[in-house]
Length: 120
Image 1 (cartoon, rainbow, N blue to C red):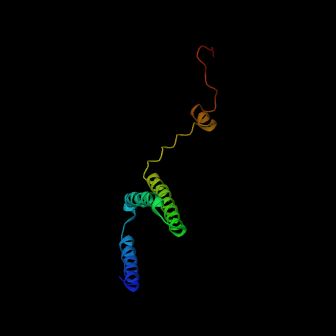
Image 2 (image 1 turned 90 degrees about the horizontal axis):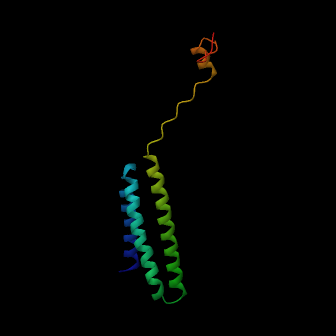
Image 3 (image 1 turned 30 degrees about the vertical axis):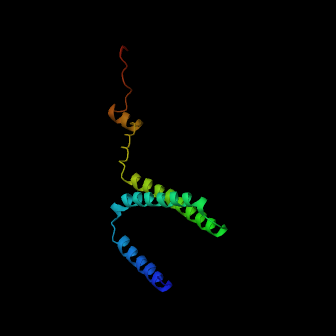
């Protein structure tokens, strides 16, 4: 293929990708992020396997960059997924506050309570 054809495919793929991603609702973000993590895991594994077959410093440099970006995307994806899942966890119920002196005084009309076994 010619360079112009390859650039046209790249640009059209970018437009199609943007159109598809912009239509996804927020509730599907977490499952899609998990799928993206799996895909980048494959990219990372492929880069590591190709490292010993690379010839020359330029190929090694490209593989190191691909492995680095793949790792960053995997780790970032797991952080985002974890943060999204935290949003769906049930929040703990607040504990009732203990009754203060005012509530105790209101219940006893301000008089000290009689202790059992004490003569009044």
